[in-house]
Length: 282
Ligand code: PDD
Image (tube, rainbow, N blue to C red; front, top):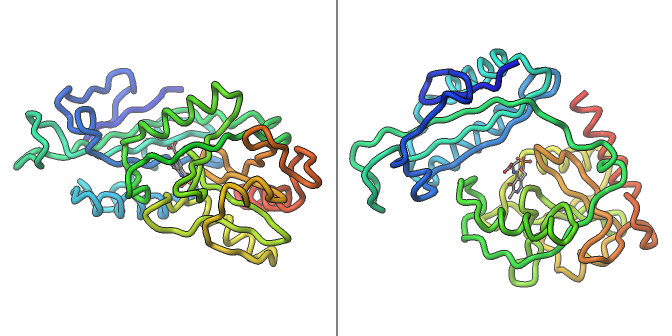
């Protein structure tokens, strides 16, 4: 089965795709992206991902190349062409190739790129056991709601987490937990689920929205507010949400065991929501 590449409306084998060295995505990080996965060959929450792509594009004054209907058609075509039972679709849109100058080029055409690769799900043992995380200073820019390709702080944070033997880095800004380097963060405290509010400090995760709905359906009170690092460490349960991590329990933060009675095991609310999510995606 082939990995699929796509540049500006043209599908081709991934290894044959090229973009200019003068592309502004490459030189300035002047672009945005989305990551979408399939379940049973169907893109999950495609409309929500494309709506966010449109919001990100608008926020950086970047034309979308095509309307969302056409984007959806391209995504579905790519998934079909790849033939993978489960795939991960990466979309990136940049301000195009032009001689290097910070101001927007007068005439460059945006570069739209897509890749479709096999989705290798996370090790199911990790989902069962939960993962360790470490807290880190959130030195990202002020518009984390834009899914920008400028991911240097996320890259550095995730690498430091790995070096510390942890799976995810949890960002702290002004004493408050914002989100993970590749995920949103939820805590459970005294039967309530708490997560950072939408706004400029976090990415409005597609999976986050689903989990808020699932929690409400399960009758779990939900609060959208920031928690401090101290509240995080004293949480009954912590879990991450995201396209790649789905619903993933965090059982250790900065070396401290989290979970019922400090057990370092996934808690009952997380397990319930994890099961509800799995039912939803089939
Ligand atoms: N990242 N927060 C950040 C900083 C993220 O990068 C992501 C996802 C999320 C979760 O969003 P969603 O539920 O829509 O996937 C939250 C993608 C998967 C990535 O960069 O690979």
